[in-house]
Each structure stands twice: as structure tokens, then as C-alpha cells.
Image (cartoon, rainbow over all chains, first blue to last red):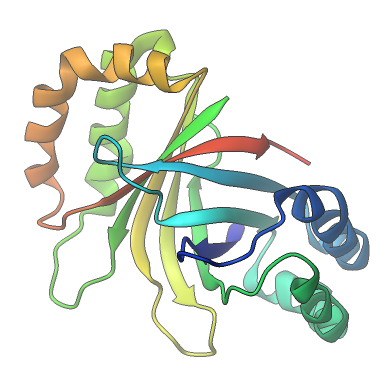
Length: 106
Length: 106
């Protein structure tokens, strides 16, 4: 199983609508990707590692898929619709990463 | 519920022993933290968002806990033992982040 992480850097003055992200954007992505997305998770950044420090990312989501190919097959055909919705909740450019899920749930 | 993410930047020439991380380090942390760590996950970085690009992080783990206080109460007393084990699998300095778990499993 693989995980596609979408991580939004916590930049001062940037806009991020956590409610829209949770209630509209991610459900849209899941609906478009269908079974190609097994499930997803959402994080809201609270703090960094040092006491009182800011989080590196204001928000993250992680899409769990069978393989890189199954992610591409599910996401690719809907990429333009999904990307067009981003402006509705943020003006940030996310960092993306594809990872192997070594331990899903200890 | 909160998630404590420990993210190791993918720096050229750095050392990271994924087997030790999975088989020894994380089980040690979980044993020491006890029920203060509900569960954890481990990722191994494969690629970045652009085709052929390197991942931002070579590895990540995420500890799921009831609250920031329960994480601190479970981790704090064992911090020195846990941190002393890091040299056994890497020479990297991790980025840490504390997040609210908005959606645990869609």
C-alpha cells in the first residue's frame, strides 16, 4: 500500500479554510477517485517540535492507495477538476510526497 | 486525538536504516510510552510530487495520542532513552510537528 501526502506549508499571511477542506474538498476528491482511494486522513497543524513553535505545515492530507499506478489511474482523469477546487480553500502551494506504508496501524 | 509526526528530511549522503526503524526503534518507543501511544504508523519515502523527483522525507512516523498532555506524559519520562537510540538508525535531524487529527479514517 502507498500513501500520497499533500502538505501545505505554514506560511505567514496565507489563507487556509480547514472547514472547506474537510467538508467539501476531500469528499470531492474521494468521490472522483472512487475505490482508487481506499481512504484518506486529514491533519490540522497545531505546533512544531520546540515549545511554542509554529507547525511546519498548516494542514496535511494523506490518500491511501494500493499502488502508485492505482493512484494515478484514479487521480489522473480528474486532476483538472480537483486542482481547480484548491483556490476555494487556499492560496498555498502544497508539498507532495509518495511513500510506502511500512506500518499502517501498529 | 492528536498526531505527533516525526519527519526525516531526505538529505543526500545521510544514513537511515529503515529495518532498524521498523523492527527496533518504533517498538521500543511504543513499549516505553505504553497506552499513552494509542498506535503509530511508519512511512518510507519513495518519490516527490513531480515525476522522477526525490521525496522530501526519507521516512516519517506518526504517533497517535489522546492529547498533547498525554503525549508529553508518556514520552517525557523516557525521552533520553528514546533519543539515545536515534544514532542507531540515522544521523539526520527530524522535523517534528503536532497536529489535530481532523479525519482519522474517512
